[in-house]
Length: 377
Image 1 (cartoon, rainbow, N blue to C red):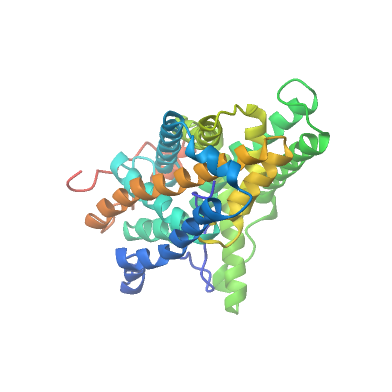
Image 2 (image 1 turned 90 degrees about the horizontal axis):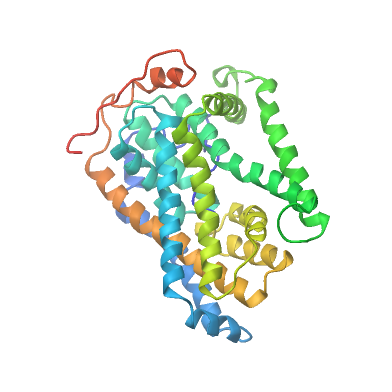
């Protein structure tokens, strides 16, 4: 699902993208500027719909779309709303314990709305969130570390699920009967990826960016430090077994899978849940392509993967198109409201300056810090 921020974006001088709070950055997130940036995504999804409606050879897909069950589509929207909410649930415990629900919804929702519009799996949403957090007094290094931690915790659920479900399918304990190439191989790849991530902190942070002579060296050093320290913090956060982090990460993944399952049901087909779960991660890799909103990349990846796993082609194309429309519009509309409210009451002064103490509480060192809600909330 290309709605989530990826690893933190860093400028060439090694600073976190979006961390500056000057007028140039403020103008970048003006509504009219964001609207212009969103035009390519709107055009892309319009072209995708026109292809389905007008292209020859897709008559069966068009017939399925015309007969879609409104009830199942409505349920898919509800599932997407629950996935959206799960993102908000885990936002504060990772970035700033004690952050009010209102602020979590404003910042996290704005990130998801931005992720619907810009390319590269929500990097623009991350830049927006980094800028807002920095305005509130949060240190740029902390934002970079916690962005990495957030991304890894959120993504880990998918990789763990692929490892477990793939092995169970390979052993014949659960799911559809497919070849080892579609069960054991993805499971082993997921296990290898998890093992690699767990080993990253052993590499050490490397030289400080300030000690590097050239901008590329500072940029490389800052990325290395953010990734390594952020990975270490993700492990520490996971060890605290924070309920909101666990529920949010699992809910974000599970409800997004449920959206895809519901759109299949909307066209009268009940896919094996194992096929949806296994096809989900592999198909989502198309969202890494620098395409506005991931449109086309995710769709092609999901359709191809699910068909390989045995789902009927026409139903899969219709289901993925419906999934894409829900995935695009629901976060954009709801997150757009969050962004509007955020623009009316931006963090200022040192509203988030207590987050560093709050982060140490996550490891059990200091008492919880309660950050007051913004004015008017």
